[in-house]
Image (tube, rainbow, N blue to C red; front, side, top):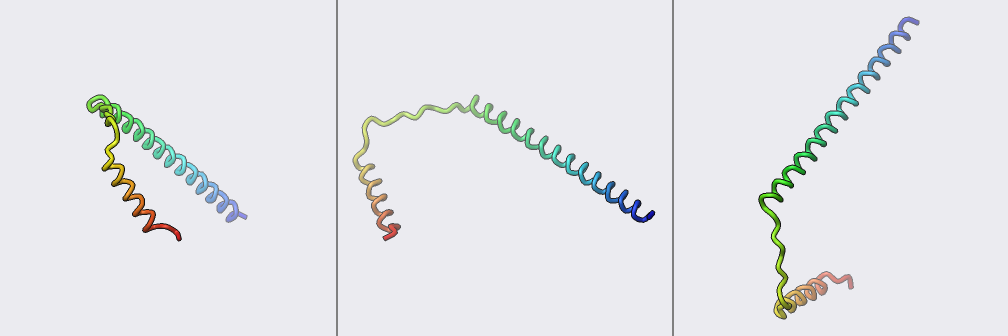
Length: 84
């Protein structure tokens, strides 16, 4: 009977230690990920402050040569990889 009580105590102690280790590990991971989010947001705001995005100026009208080149490339791709 004494061995059964000792075994139950040891299992209970191991389970308690395992849960404690799990919670500490989850806390460390949560803290690290939170710090990572804060760091990435800070870097993003710094980059936006010192290197603002310039608006892209659209071309006036389309270049017919560019349209022909893109159309030929799409046609060639579809011809090469068609499922027929």
